[in-house]
Picture (cartoon, rainbow, N blue to C red):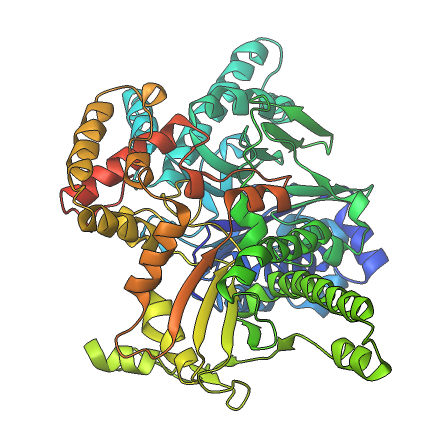
Length: 630
């Protein structure tokens, strides 16, 4: 019901044939550019604050550009970018040009293509923060274009390290810090080759020899060990080397496809399947800690850089962010819906005949299907019991069998979002009143003060939308009880690896736990936790433990859910409200391949996450509500 912002989506294409090959086979030099557009549009869900495109030409002539970039802000950024790119060349004219002229002079027609979709998790916005980023140099092999889906937990440390080397980054952001660190490693590799070859080869052949022998694997091995976070870092040099590196825990996703014409990488598997029209088995997952590297000559290697650590692939990718068209994700989301059925049955006291089931928003539809299938299994058990019971009594007749078999789940579409309504024109209570009408409800499907109304969402994080609009909207249907179900567990801790959740006070579960401590006279735990966090902050990150777990320790999940329901129910609501969350056990049973759950459990995959959660609590306790733990 409340939109979460996810870090980014990436797309890369490397052509393996001469440009003329694609014009002859596919009818245009824009074939790869068209594929990039589709890869980006199919991942539009991953970033709507901005987008960027980059292209590297391998055969331009001196005095002409060979690295091209176009960026834009806003939800329509992709359309704006390609609308700006396409007029730069007359397709009919270019397709009739000699191939050597196209290779040398035509903008945005090259061998390496990079696309990026941005959602900021740092609160920094503007075109200066939109990927891809460029590091320019007069030598092609020292030019670097970079984009990524990442969030680093130790930016301060990395920043200080590159400043100590004498560099002067022009912007303080994790992207610029990584760009400069990779650029420094690339410079060192260029220097190494220069020293090795200068006595053997003269200019201009020396520069070409350096380009031909750049070892991107060593560049990555020199730069990346200092990175703490979740990441897929993509890059290309001006001389034609391309790479994508994934973090060792696999926190952020990356998939690739290779054939004799092209190498393609993207954040999601089904995107590649659809755009390239290939089977699922032809698309590979980039292993955690590994890099996909394509050299200037087109040689491909998938090689270990950081080593594969414990699997902590992000479960929120499966619950919420990635496209549900992936076969595994679709199955897992259905299983998440099935897993909440026992608790839903408890919440409605097993009264299926007087319960109506629905979902809000549309992203929860697959979990809803799974929940309905699980409830239908429960209903079948009830039918079987009643038939067997009547048979034992000798009162089973065709009429009674029909009555039992006619029992069905009551599934309805109870809410439709009114996309025309805008709430920014009002403030305060007026705004809240308008927010309560963002959804239109379907009247007549609920028996007043008799039926339960059960709605499932994929996640309930802050609870703001729930309190300001959803519960009030559902209450207009006059149910006896409203049961709001989350297919994911309670979000209790900030995420520092790509999701826009960084302040402790934002979480409904945290606010409920704090309120329970105060209700029960246990406020000393708040002070003690603060003191422990201060002590931990003096230790190296690798030695710190998550002290914030103490806030939740005195309570069961049910305790916190009940308090949340109390706090999020608007004044004047007639129906009883209950919130049902997925359990951690249910999550791990449904999503076996991606066990990363730190935002639910507080078990962070890297030391940086633990350090930052303690800092987040310090900020909360000291009242620094505007400050992020970064």
